[in-house]
Length: 397
Ligand code: ADP
Image (cartoon, rainbow, N blue to C red; front, side):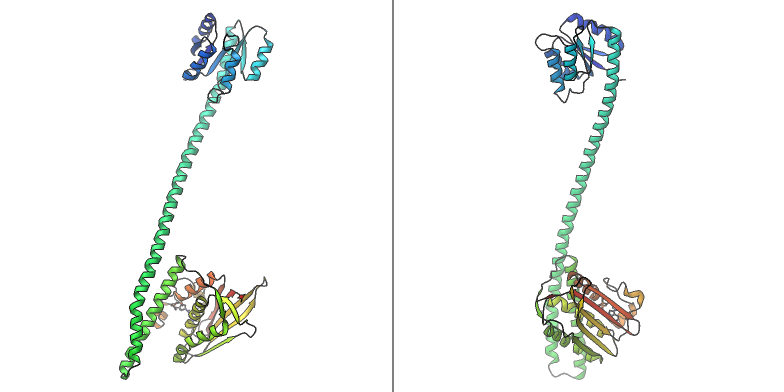
């Protein structure tokens, strides 16, 4: 059990001695000080649990000591019993005001002293307990705070590392695709040259196969790079004025050979109320449209592919540009429609064999549309055909 430390302050040695005799048998650790100055020194070295403080002392009286103790954070909570002369009502009031906890009168009655000391020490015990709890809590809070800030630092470090890795990956992919594209462009160019010379039918056929494969490879590289640029946040839109009819003509010219080759009719139309000029990223818009229209042609064996651009009014009165691509092709089973815009999704692996591709086109299209704050969707019936559409908020020039 804790041995309570009591400091007795009195300028009269016999008073000190008396108190010591009264308190020591009770198991207290009694310390003595003969003046206010000595008391302050002792308090610093022993930190008593209770102080019995004489009021009347030369040099520094009890009130001055009391004031010092109550103005110091380290000693403020030590309970103080003031020892006053008989009937000193003024002193008691002054002491109460200065923060004294209790009083005993001289000559000190042993029983009363014991009772007061005991009751104050009981309060002090609770106070200590509370303080310990609070300190423990504060230590725990500090420990947790430190742990948290360490974890946060760790997260920040990891995020920075991931960011750096992402940038590196982006750069790596950009370099790789550049390195792949350069020789491939050589192959494409040379193939075209060879194809323009006199060839036997067999040679012509072989070279056309080379050309097709090279085109596919180029397309694949482009899609992969675009995809990684979107994933790493590198891709940015570049909106600029674009002339709609000319832009659409270009696209039609690009798609026509493929459609003709398959014997599929390609119809392109635009609403008469469409403005001539719009603001948009011509390259990315074309990419989405060509992707959807290219698929429509790819998955249609007979019939037609219709591309239409029109204006659509939103609920909130905003004008949107609506692109629709209808085909009379193989269609998409309902259970596949939901996931069709996810990366690397293909309807079934047997169709992959028949129609090459890696399932990046639609997810790329949907991400590009997202970047334009647009929407994308489809309706389709297996065996009857599909209608893909996307719409983007329109900013007229
Ligand atoms: P891929 O590069 O394989 O063409 P896409 O993301 O463009 O990738 O398309 C994913 C799959 O969605 C295709 O493999 C095909 O199964 C299906 N699909 C897309 N467009 C159509 C369409 N117009 N008609 C039928 N199936 C389609």
